[in-house]
Length: 323
Length: 259
Image (cartoon, rainbow over all chains, first blue to last red):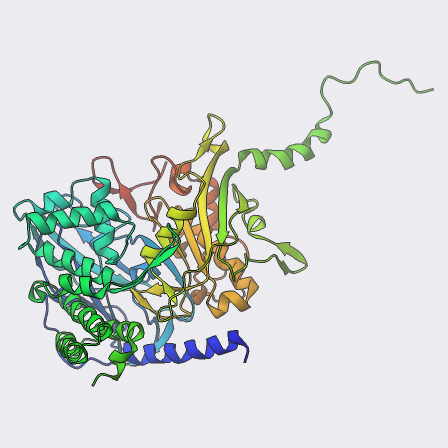
């Protein structure tokens, strides 16, 4: 068989699975700080699980786009600031309007879907670090709003969410340590954002300092998760031309110290899934199954977390066979 | 018998100057963006395309825009680092490619005291991987990415996608599109068919040129608003009108006319 044709068929199957997962109708009422606002027929809802944070603590947004009209609407099935279809606007007394700008801009094909009346697409992503650096750079009250914009044929009118208020407080110097305006601070921001990056050595050192000097700070939990997640996966380091293999034993020393209740739901799910992957890799099937169950419990019915399960199953196929 | 003039005229007739001037002036006034273009083994650079009998290349797409694009094909033998369970390259891994293989400076080379004759630098790489989206590997969705939003200094094309491998026009268009992002052009600068329109948003046959809005930006906005790595330059953000803002020295984000 032509390898290109074979590849295409495989990806079509994967794409169909993704579509099925992403296009879930939501029945349960929202349970977190959130608000929504209708456009012509699209309703965009923004949720931020933790609205009281300390300086330097990563912030994650969940957005849900629902067709409240009576006719199908063409939308992007992947809601992501990188794709330019979702914009996050942050305002504070010091800075009246900042559009969150991701570090990467992506161009997509085949990313459209028809959203039937009542259907929802959803996604979750970080908004705390981007091309303008740290999005929440000082203790203050912030208002965060999401907008969905699309172009092309039959594009619906833009939809805006109602704002969500965040309070960022100083926490005994951890924020000052992390947001110190140095290249190491930039690297730490990228490392927390990607939760990967062997080449970001200065950033990892700074996060190790955070763990050492502020081990009980909420920021320390994100640092443990990022360091554990990075080690739980192989890393292609093209700067040195080789793959650093996953080190699950060391990764678990970080992941099993994470106090998941200090993290937003997205990262709770991710922490449990990372733990499950590593335990499965180390042939600890029972413990892996328990960690996977915790991940499912933390995810609940929220469709924006399903990509995490898909990715974990892709990286560790045995998880897909776990009941 | 017709006598020949003893001396050449001190200046040639205007008609003899017009044509060379028309050819040379736009070249002189076009700032140069030098693209260091690498690729992994198992990939190819975007091939020249014939459109309506005309040869179209990456350089020719930018001809007449005020930006003289100089494509330097560099390393063509980067070995892909393959993982059995993960065909997608992450954003963090992409940045190691630039760290390990970029030779051109991030900063412009100044060859004269005027902005228009600076040479600005951009790094591009064709990778033998898929791209990630929302930190997950979903093959076939992502054709290209531009990164380092604060400098707009690099981009990647994901050769593993069927679209890039099998559709030369789409490949060439995607590459020109990523270069456009590095020049601070946005999807909103497309008009449905031109280069900056996102592939999914095309409303007709793609046009291998720029919308009036894009051309206005490329031709008229100051260098720091458009060129990658420009000293004191704008990050990937909008300029004027629906374009938005970048940090003011006083750390207040303000709308700017970029003047």
